[in-house]
Image (tube, rainbow, N blue to C red):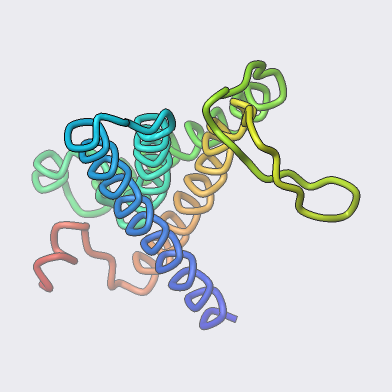
Length: 187
């Protein structure tokens, strides 16, 4: 059972990392294409800047879940070093629980924002699910597609926080718990 959970955890991490890499590549590609078209051919695409920004936003939200899982988020490592290991453990778990609550807020208010978001991007084409199949829509992508990352990222942050807490608790119980700085150094 534990090996299955570790496999899923690793698969999710690799998938999110791949998405981040793809989004970064898209961001750079859209920017280069827009700049070349604007300054060399004097014919900039209408959609170039918007897709660059959307790729950046989605990249940051996916990376948030990765940083929570890897414990790379803002931490008080200096204070943790001065505290006894168990005290540092409980403070770290408290902050991870706070981040879990942030993920819940992102889910709740993100779903509300997606449900109530009006407006469309006039410069964007999109695909939609209609009549049991994917249909190409020639213009006007709904803005809710762009902010759909907020509840998705909130869910991923919650899962990452729970996984981090469970992993740390199991390590503390087994006597192998190390702080994130010690894990990086291989101590």
